[in-house]
Length: 214
Ligand code: ADP
Ligand code: ZN
Image 1 (cartoon, protein in one colour):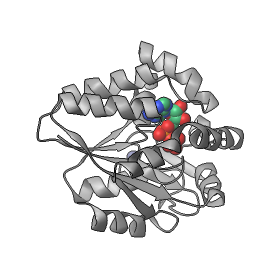
Image 2: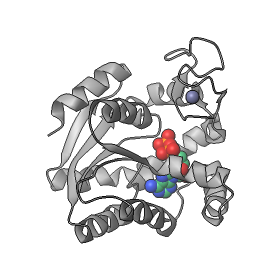
Image 3: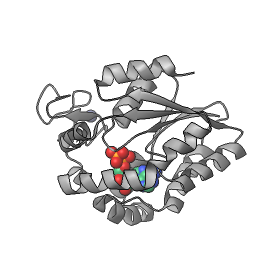
Image 4: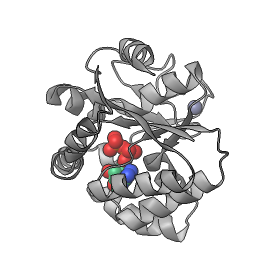
């Protein structure tokens, strides 16, 4: 079981990049944010618990996240290649991911740090729109759909995530610096960190990542 991680601030483009990498490789995209939003939509107990944290821009408790990820990996095959997006987000999650992968005979292969200047991040998040049906990501000016408000892929309606409002965006950036940025050193020390310039276009960032994928 191989695993790579996309690490970076909210708005760094993890979801968009993951889509590009997924379509060019065999990696299975695992986004804890998407899993949580699906749980909220489905009205599950996990979804109810997660929603309060997500609406404030705070992290969902580690136990909830680890349970979701472990359940997902337990359904997989030994030959699967996973690409984690938005996970791990704390040192505790990173350590427990190592344990979980270890039990399944796997390990983390590479960690891609998506580097983007903060002003770019704020503009990206506040302009972000997402397809309600298929999850495709757009931006009002950077990646506009052909028809305003309508998904190019499936025709579904586009919406703004509740946590992409400006106040919540600033809190999410703060949470990233306080709780997630320490993972940069954690993985750099292990020799797994690969830096990607993600402040350009999705195409360039995806190409750079694919060229550095071992
Ligand atoms: P972004 O990276 O743009 O913030 P995500 O979809 O990855 O978007 O995350 C949205 C929210 O979901 C986070 O603000 C947090 O509340 C919750 N979340 C997602 N992944 C995790 C995680 N690994 N640990 C804790 N909370 C998470
Ligand atoms: Zn769609």
